[in-house]
Length: 111
Image 1 (cartoon, rainbow, N blue to C red):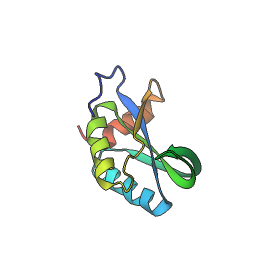
Image 2: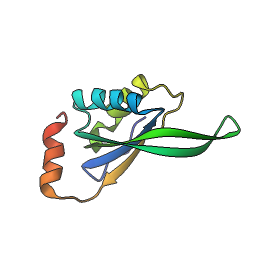
Image 3: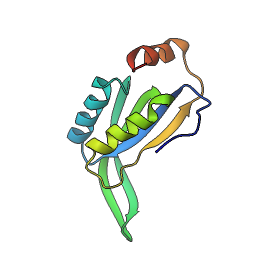
């Protein structure tokens, strides 16, 4: 799941989990591995198509703050720990931010 050479240094990765406990466990794995500086979790309701059926499910969304260069490692860690056959793993660029906050991300993720 290689990304093209990123034009930005920091990013937010979005994924969802089936429930709060699974989300909390995944967040802990990512922060402890220093692949994420912060993971925010929020309850959501998702409507989606899976195997030709429209489904509606309660899920927990994770907003993961990291460095763009860590995306491949982060995505691999999510896939390994995730219960979904095809988990949502989307990277969005952080194109600007409070310099002190971006420095905090820098100091709390690997290399």
